[in-house]
Image 1 (cartoon, rainbow, N blue to C red):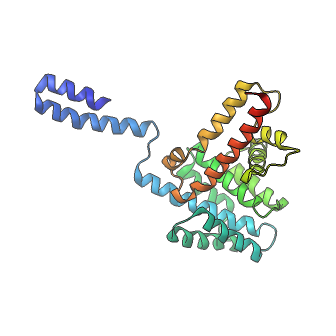
Image 2 (tube, rainbow, N blue to C red):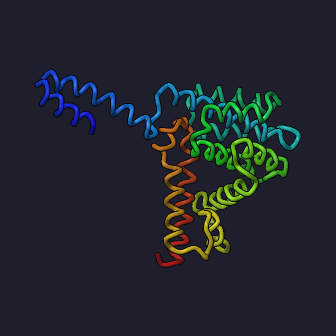
Image 3 (tube, rainbow, N blue to C red):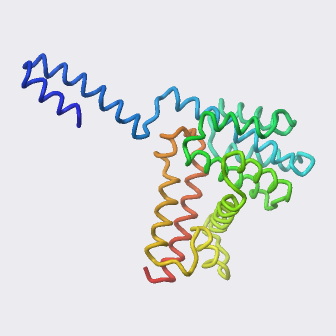
Amino acid sequence: MFKLICVVVGYLLLGWLGAFLGLILGAIIDRIRAFGQGALNPLHAALRQAVFLETVFIAMGKLAKADGRVSEAEIAHAEVLMQKLGMTPEHRQQAIALFKQGASGDGDVYAICKKFMSVCGHTHHLKEMLLVYLIVMAMADGEYHPEEEKLLTEIAGHLGYGPEAFKRLLDMVVNQTHFAGGQANSETALEDAYKALGVSKENSDAEVKRAYRKLMSKYHPDKLMGQGLPEDMIKVATEQAKDIQLAYDTVSKQRGM
């Protein structure tokens, strides 16, 4: 937009030379405006990606060790998850090393979260996506150990989520996973669907639709990658978006929306 304006003004003032100078000036202004509206410098994006990857897999290792020991099943689960994500070989090697670091007890949770917050803390979506990843990982083996919940609540606190806010997010994510693969429990599907959307039967159609759109916006791949989520970790967000869609379809069908 500013490029065109600057070109026209430059041409009117100085002819073709002014138009050329206006093109350069307009490009600079547009770039500055883009960064102001949320576009991310490639170097900053790379840093956020590295810190996100580091935090999520160290925390995953700590979650695996939360109940006292890291079982062979939990190690196998971590490797399956890495394969499911379709991670690049380089990221997979990093993830394995970070998982082992977390499981070994190296680094306290506060220091890990402090580093994450210093790089990614002002992007609400990345903070929430970190918690979503960790909740999904904690639930993936079919068990949710009290020590895992305790650790996740602590991590959420360091990210600025109070106990009630984290509980709401936890309920939403857990109920979203009930729709994974389209295998929702037919007896509780409607109740699960409302919880997955973070609403209740008392909410209006407009409120339900607004909650659904807000959730889908959070999980939009382009938006998440633009904020610094590693490309090969988008798959979990995509799967959650599918579950949210199924939950919304369940509610909208029952309401005749």
